[in-house]
Length: 403
Image 1: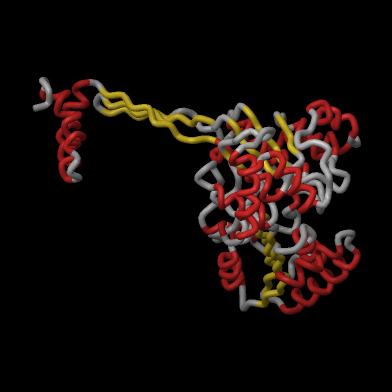
Image 2: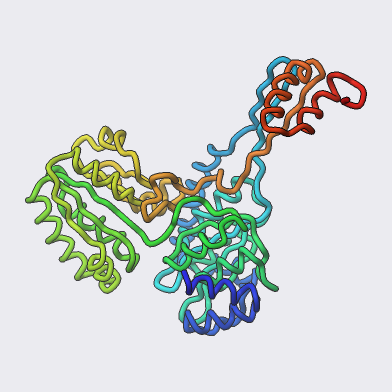
């Protein structure tokens, strides 16, 4: 947190100059420009493999379809002359963050920017760490074009969060910041919460708890432990089972798959720090372990997975059965893959349209309604010692100057 606070202070004090220096110092690259040329963004659609473009557009359509159902129509209640309307209003400008550096995450662009657009946000800003050449990967820029992002900035880490929260000469100040990142990004979002809207989930390093029994091939469970581990260090990858033979088989497959992984070092780092096999007495104990961890991803590879899922209290997303790997949620299922980590699934959930809106209450009363309600207002205002509050209704219902 000390490092995060110093970075935020530097950006607040020096703006774009700080962003350039921090990118050079922390990312080890000289970015040619903080803001990506809009033509480079749209041009990326033609530079990527057509099959990848099709996949991006397919994913975007599913994400958009899912989130359109979350748009809340205006609600209205009326009772004896008192009318209350509740209307969702989008924020004006949303800031999205997509990780970079270790890998490109075009899917995260879709999973943050599209819910914002569906919510009705007028302007969407995206920050992505530059790659080794100082540029953002074409596939990420193409995703920004597909998601209708307004502007893209080649900055990452806590400095990107600070730039969007406070604004700089180039980066506009936003109203809400969403998107996952490493521990520095997640802590920076906590630090600026209140200045801007931050969804309540702590969206940090990736997590999975796989609950498996003898009905699933061990390789299925093993690959899905490795899938989340390959995101790199500080994450969490657990296997929970009540069958010792399953534990042994899955562990052996994890070792085999990890050794063959192109991201072998990242997988090894995660498994070394937070890779565990938990052997429990039975399904009830497995459920207790899962709820205690409150993982970002919970995979139920057990007989009767749907019934098991109905008893889960704490998880960002639950995937049922051997044919529902968490990667479906990463890319094409529809809900945002921006999910709570570090136990915050106890009180928060996936990123939704609601994270980019706020409720506005519109209240109307006629005279008869006010006269009916005035005695209760006066009584409560008197109990709180707020005489002017009571006078506000008394003047209207008793006439004169309220004396």
